Length: 86
Image (cartoon, rainbow, N blue to C red; front, side):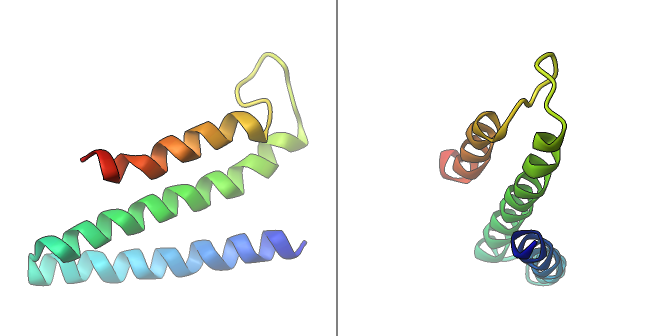
């Protein structure tokens, strides 16, 4: 219960921050602000994965991907490492 509330609160806060950073990126055109905006985008993706994983685990189906949390964790790690590769 509290886990779900924390995920929703975190996603809402990340959405507000992302929108503010997009506006700041357009207004300032500074590379550091643009990079921070991309970091916020990856935070949103991470939050989406945290929200999606418990929902996908409620009705497991062995013929559909994802089956469980362990498979989604690799997607999260990959998404989190993308900014460091650029």
